Image (cartoon, rainbow, N blue to C red; front, side, top):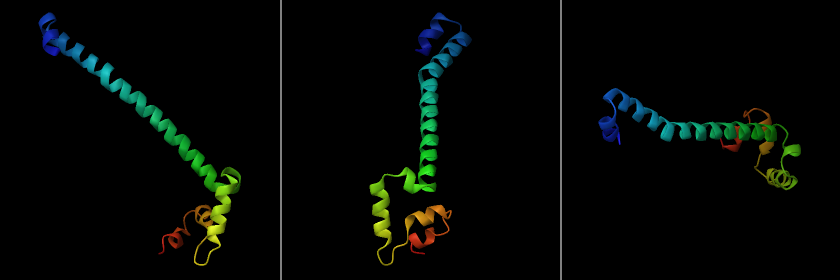
Length: 96
């Protein structure tokens, strides 16, 4: 395509047209997709943080009950406590 442009235009103008074409066809859609991906990641992180700070209110009741039941078994630690204490208790979940 660049060769066809170079035949019709001067070499500098053909290079500019090729660069603009590549930018419009490849780079611009990629930036749009990246911006939407970043926005969704930020929203998901905010929802996760809200759920971890107040799991009884934000998570479905079934999930909270299952975690409570599993944390009452011998040898298990409450998973919510690990999140609400800022990860200080996570070593118990990891077995360290």
